[in-house]
Length: 344
Image (tube, rainbow, N blue to C red):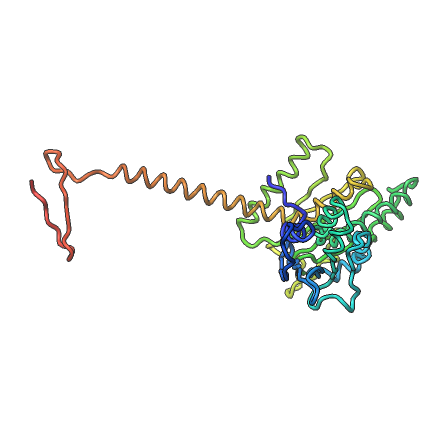
């Protein structure tokens, strides 16, 4: 299956052209609006009066939820290392966007080596990923605390189970109220639950088959993979208190599905393994629906191909109009629709 890239390729291309300019080319004004997954919007434009500086802004639908997880501090830790980047405060952020930076491209070309510029381009292309990573780091850090706290305790004790059941669930409405990510840390795991909305009945069928492959893969060969659970309509017990009721007073929705990933300690090791885990699980919803649409498109193309083949067979099987002696009779029509026979 195809893997969706974390980097925004348009941002990567735009910044590469600026930080690795061709000799003889003059700087031009720039004003680009770029869309990404989960209703994320970027705006890259030259600063008024200075074509050597780029204003890079991002807008996310779930920004308010991310702010609660200190995503601004996390972004600052990622970008403050670059001298050519200026992080704007709340009063200077571009109107209509949630976060803005100014990149001095001329200073970067003059001062930074090639490796630093490539790393800068990569980090800016991962702006959405870094912003979404903050809630996962918060949940994983809480897991570290609980694992240390209950390392020598009897976790089956009733009072400890009561404490763990009351652990806060981090809620990220990454596509509005309809589709949400729920993160629940514990002393021996972190549970990540995606609520996803299916647009039609066929998507439900494809989704069930697709998710069954995740479950079977762990049983067959990939023993180190996270445990995957899928429930349709009924929300997992861990998050039922966090799901808003509908106007009819019902929690469950016939068009909703819930996908649960159980991340074990081997997936939460600090360092590259943890970062890799965050990068992949972030894009699960987009990966999931992308492959549902690809599967439907493939099946439709195969169906159209088969129909064309059947039509060819039917056309070849049509009997010709022959007389008693086996000669072909040509029946023709005039412009008015009258028939006449052509006799030899």
